[in-house]
Image: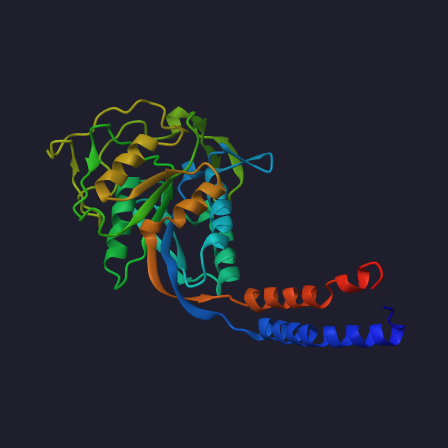
Length: 327
């Protein structure tokens, strides 16, 4: 049985009309469909970055070039923003001496993505207001600041754990809060090997490296001891106040103080994660332990778009009857 070209063309038009119309309609819906609120996980984080001088130590690599700890942490956080679902909120803060300075309170990540990246890019060590780096007290004061909020976000505390002035191994500030009341993650930065700490002028220009006789090598009374706003007392493991003792003499060098940070995580009920790669940090930030179930704006435009593609495929499928011999 043979068909004239006119008949074949008419059949083709008739067969294509409905699926092509459906495809056009579905593509139009995909283009205008707004995000729909659906139940799902979201994450609320306040990220506090250590901006003290040891964070200038270059013991990371990025694109084959050495970078300092602060820049690598900022790069990793910028990459991690992409993994947070819409509806999540994140804010930036910095730590120096023993205090937290909030730069940007937590805001929704999708609608404020570029503002979050711009603020993160402008964080650097020149913002530091003191030479001291009392990590333990900085962590505890950050927890207190978040604890007083109506709906406390999770605390993400990014630091190498380098205390300056140094602490005696048996000497620590006592944490008087409730462990786990503020959920959080301590992110440890730096390598395992002791490395020299860059010395910078007030404008951020390099002046070489700190020498042993230029830094405090013994843990004399902490700058923000019992007279500070932090109001912690230095105690030993039994809880008794103790005197400061001589440090090891390598305080002009720095590495990741992982054991110290793990101990702080245990005291405060937080998690500890060493910063090895941006992907590891991204996974840690979306840990189910930090998830909050709520209605999250969800992009569903891909559903009608996919159906439209299927309609196009159906419209232009080959007619097997016309390909059979003798048809």
